[in-house]
Image 1: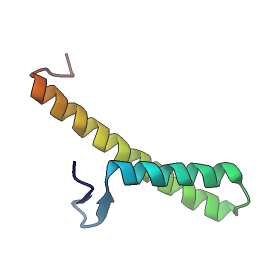
Image 2: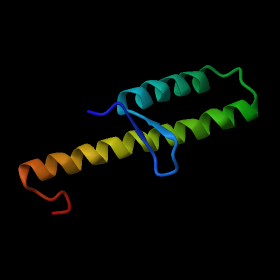
Image 3: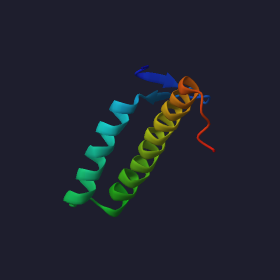
Image 4: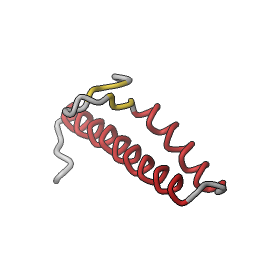
Length: 75
């Protein structure tokens, strides 16, 4: 599997494992507290982006798997 891709906007998009690991760190930082409201909001926004990236990778994997076995997940 590809580790990183480039989004249509030209920005690097981390691979699934990298995005997941960073998301875990974001969650830990938010749970630990001790950050300002502004820092917490920035972490939350980054977490949302990372969660979306992970979901895109998982959706893509599902589509590839469905195509390989000849099924449609919409059934």
